Image (cartoon, one colour):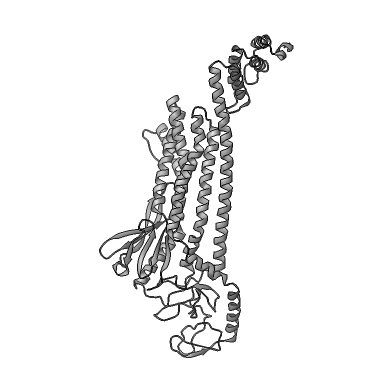
Length: 526
């Protein structure tokens, strides 16, 4: 039984991005649609219709992104005695290599409609202006994006679209997988290995020699010994000393290769898809309790911000978990030793092409260029050495650790901010609910409630500051016998701040306040 090599087909980054956009707009879209519909039911008008239309448009975008997230969910290819798939649309598919039609299995670039949020808003604006100033409704021009697809075809004519990618790094991963499949099928012959000029050649046949700390090294092609310069031997010894001191990299790389596969990632994505709408709904509960008529933009804004921040925190946590899969994709496509040029030959260095020494280790260093090579993960036959690739395994592992740590810190900040926004929203909602109750009590004849409603409009508490409306509520409280309401109405008319100054009415309200027992009004002679 041959060793099984796991290669990412869909890392899950594209799926997470689409899911994040869908979840971030689900709360605002549903809230705006419901809020606008309730406003329309209460008082038909342009504002309610606009809010409902914007909410519906956002929900259409949410559905499109959710479908794309499902289509691009994480998946892995397991290459062993047969070809199997884990996760994604073809989870559980297992094919014998003899079933695969390698000649028709291919990667293709197609164009696909990708609508960003900015384009969505542009569509709405363009439609509004075309409806106002043109004879017929038009939409903004569409924009198509290139998408790379990997298509597997069997000998009996079945076709499987294994994956699609629009990000350059993920497109390169699909091409690497295609090369590995073709290599296992024996369709691509190993390319003649191009080696750097400083690679030692056999003194007899000129074939490249494996770098070794020995006086002579035997040629793998002709079997003749060739001397190894002392300068090269000294460089090999120095490199081995550094490599022995940093053996922890091998354990980290082995951890990347043995990490849980696409099934775990899809479980995380499903958890986010279920938990985040519940969190958004939880943040929307105060709005529903207060009612659309009583909740203003300030209150709704806090709740939307809290829900969106909670979604962001959850997405960042999943993105931290994806850091290992992203590192595995780069490891598999960029750090694998080159395939042997013939059965039984040594694998080649990924950077300089020189033959590598035989070893039981997972990572082997090249004695010529000191590049680290991971054995047994690159199954492509037709691949030239990545001479331009200078990233070390240590750099890759550090980058993965930094990415995971930064995502976790970002998630913590987002979740704390979500709790803070939710707290502010609950406070503002409770104030709005109290204000609504006061208005109802005032309407029912509670004079003190009228005074407090007027004060809310006077100070801008739970509602927008409006002195004219405040005066109306003070006047209603005065009519019901609230002395302080009379005095405040007199002050509004005396100073004329936000209302028209009226000294005659001011004196009447002041007298009424005095009559009701407000001592300050009696002492005031204005």
